[in-house]
Amino acid sequence: MHSPVAAFAWEFRQRHRWGLIAIVVYLIVLAAIKLVILAHDFPIDFDSAETFAFVFVLPVSSYFTYFIAVFTFGLDGDITARQSMYPARMFTRPVSSAALAWWPMFFGAVASVILWTATRLLALWPSSIVVPVVWPGFLAVVLLAWAQALTWMPYGLSGVRVIAVILWLTAIDIIVILAIHFRASESLMIAFLLPQIPLAYLVARYAVARARRGDVPDWSGAFTWFARIAGVSRLRRDFPSAARAQAWFEWRLSGKSLPVWVAIILPFDLLLFWVAGTSTLLVIELLIGVLLIPIIIATFAAATVSKPSVDVSDSYGLPPFMATRPLTNAQLIAAKLKTTLASTALTWLLIIVAVPIALEWSGEMPLVVDRSHRFAQTVGTPRAVVFLLLVVAAFIASTWKQLVQTLYIGLTGRAWLIKGSIFVTLTLLFLIGPVAEWIIDTQRLGRLWSALPLIFTLLVCVKMSAAVWVATRLYRNRLLTDRVLVAGAACWCVAVFALYGVLVWMLDTPHIPHYLLLLLAILAIPLTRLSAAPLALAWNRHR
Image (tube, rainbow, N blue to C red; front, side, top):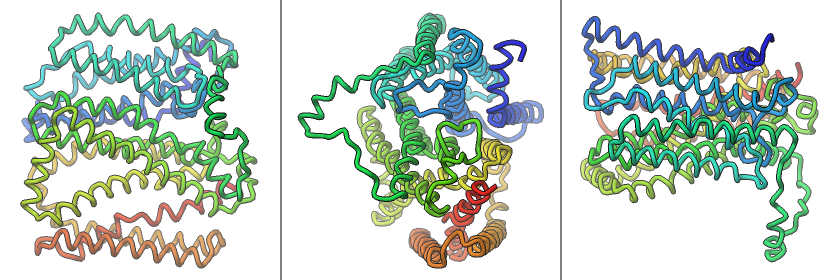
């Protein structure tokens, strides 16, 4: 590289090019939709807050979350650790600490401003919303800059970084929400946000300089008297088995990523309840958006689940330290599955506790309760309760599914396959909104409903054929025992028929054939991709 700026630009472009390409694709889709509507008067109505939130707010918020993860190097380190999240491999570069802090902040600011400017110009904004021109871009830069400064700072205790990031960014967000509520002028908002950018840079520069010279404080000595009072020993007991040791290692490696990132982002989405007003529909949609947060973040956190080690962020292969462990491929996969289950449970415990508190404090709880009572009167209280439990279970299961369903890709160790899958996932995720809106507004929903049996049948045939192929390879390579294969197949059948029974009881109507619900249950329960994880690990472990 001829200059530091070229080196940093290559760093972000090369490592995250598929995610950036997905963002460009989304912006192109926005531009195409706007051109079609304006030039040909196409019958798609974006002039509603609900459609606008579904097609625009959710994707842009997700992409900004992705920017935070990229430009803070959040995908490379442990956010709960004491040491800085700034990659140690970059400290050896022949540049100053000021440059190490400046260029990631500069490229992050440029990317955030471009994202806001492009969406401000290309999105179809509802006529009832007065959209500011400049200050949201400054807000994005400020939030990203403070996230970088606080995550790069070394701390004396594990977990303090999470608390610092949540409290500081939440304080900024509260001030902004209050300014919007009292209709502050754009010049006032800029005057509040602009001075924070150089202040965040100074903090980031100081943090990088400390981390570069290995200055990591240790505050644990100040709390040793707590341990003495409680009688807690600092000696760690030996692990009873290699499998338990591997489970502990997997939790330290990737188990905390999902709940920590949800804890950071959740306050910003919950604050929207305070500005939702008396619109019951908008409150319900905001609630659904909050419940989708773990699923979206799990899409990005899945990349860390399949990482073999914290120290090999630039390589997807298995290091000898991992490949030579006295564990079978099945035991290594089992440790990852246990970690994802614990991570999902902790994340949704946070959601289940925080959401009712936010609804109560914001005054929106009566709206939700009233809509729930109406729904219960329409379908009956037992069905309403079961439906609510089924929806919550579906969100929880979808979060876990997002964490584990890409194991078969991540464990292959092939960088092109891993990054390509991320690009395809992001592209499909953010095309769902425009495509769904197009299907509804062009009155093609009836045709789609008529074609659902054929579509589901084809998908089930593909899934079961792939499952038979994977099971055959697992049996021939002796990666799983006969007992495990039979028990896994039995558990999958039980889960499918249990879901099928609940769906038949819930949707007891002649308009929905029972065989369609069975096909849906077969597609909903994961099988093929999860079963392929041992094959992928064996391919990576013995190459």
